[in-house]
Image (tube, rainbow, N blue to C red; front, top):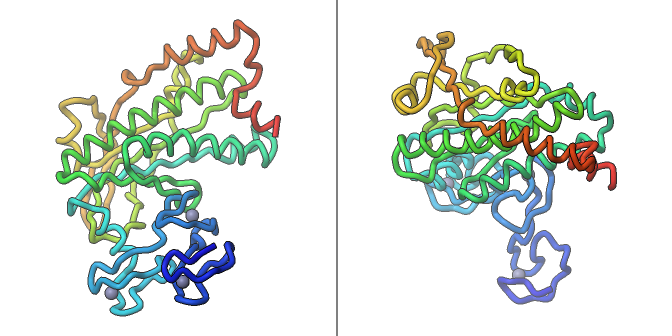
Length: 295
Ligand SMILES: [Zn+2]
Ligand SMILES: [Zn+2]
Ligand SMILES: [Zn+2]
């Protein structure tokens, strides 16, 4: 191939042009995927960023700007943020070990995780936000492209509701076929563009969830949405919020709330869909398991 910068004939697998030193491919420092774009196609990590302090282009794997020493992570976050403060969704799956054990093999679990990611990624693509997967399959979705905190808070809850629906649809199938559900803990938190982007610990421990009695609707119990007092006013007029514990965060007491979105989850539709699948006998196992088995 030809180097897009200097035109020299170079090997198509070259990571860097040997002639002009242009970087052609970048290995993601988080998941090791080889990328040709600025954002990792697999995990959503930003790979190259322009220093907000001095303008130098840096690889994100170097944590500091090679010229002035400014944090490259902060540069990346500031570059994509249009507001100083914004809402971030943290999505955690606390019982993945159980899901893995229930699915029975690494191969099926890997396929399950790929399908799970696709379900999340396809939505974040639609609405033009970046989803980032960090350690332990934790997802971060930042609503930092809008200009106000309230627009950001609205974007975050709308996304939580959409993802909760997609995950419940998955859980209805999982419960019917495998008698387990994937627990999904959403936390909506406020963060600032000049804060460490990986400071995602709220200090709040989400309790083990109670089970609803009606077993077919158990999928609803797998979803929990928590926020703290920063967003109380943004959400309490529209949603039912239940006060949870207060927790000492950085020397200040902060109250957490559960947002009840159960009425906004179209579980009856998913149960109906499941029943009609059962009627024609074609869905002995959920599609994603089926697909994994066929590989
Ligand atoms: Zn070149
Ligand atoms: Zn990656
Ligand atoms: Zn710099």
